[in-house]
Length: 288
Image (cartoon, rainbow, N blue to C red; front, side, top):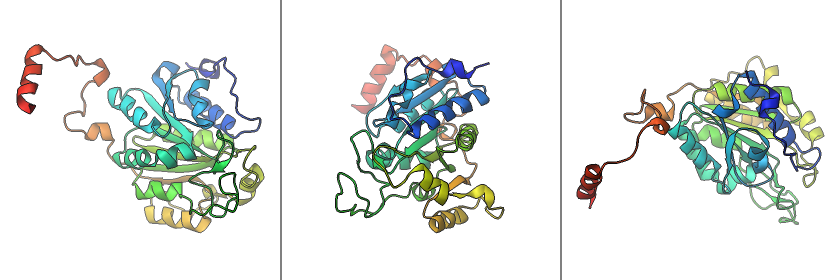
């Protein structure tokens, strides 16, 4: 049985002291151990940015990919070996900026991976520029007179893309985000978990205190129905996105099982994919 020690690396994270990403890293470790997943069966993909470094701080398989391309790689891993637990992690700039197209298509495909975004409403690694989730009027190094753009709403985007599992947490509550990650991994399909992860160095507005005072906990609303997509849209709109908990969940067929001829078949990683000379010639004659 795996332990927290099995998941830990000797490499010390070089995030700023107090960064919310520390809590997310610990929550992923705790969730994996609680679900009894062995490190050799766990894959963590990440992109570029402060949060993108997370794949190097966990003793599992993984890859530090190009900016915005972590979901593309993660989907390829799951398509090759559906027996692996695949988690993709990154930041709001990585996931909703250059990677926004991959996010939308991974959600609609419903491929069985868990996507965790550490959302700090700013670019941290490049020293404090506005990001896709920075609010309009937000003062940053790249918007000294205020951000002129309207921000992306990650939850509404995920709902519009028909993601089958959508949740949001706050890194100041590690027990809660651990539970959300566990639920996301257990979910058969694309699980999106947005986590408010304060940047203590460059974002002096969306701080730990801000989220503690302003975030709405869905657990406190007995009337909320996470299977009601319309209610989910309404709740996100009413709270301006500052809500935590399970936003929406719907069971539907996983992408790999939906592929023609793939349901119940052996993993591609275990198959002999080498073509014979005759097969190569047949292909050449067919398509050339």
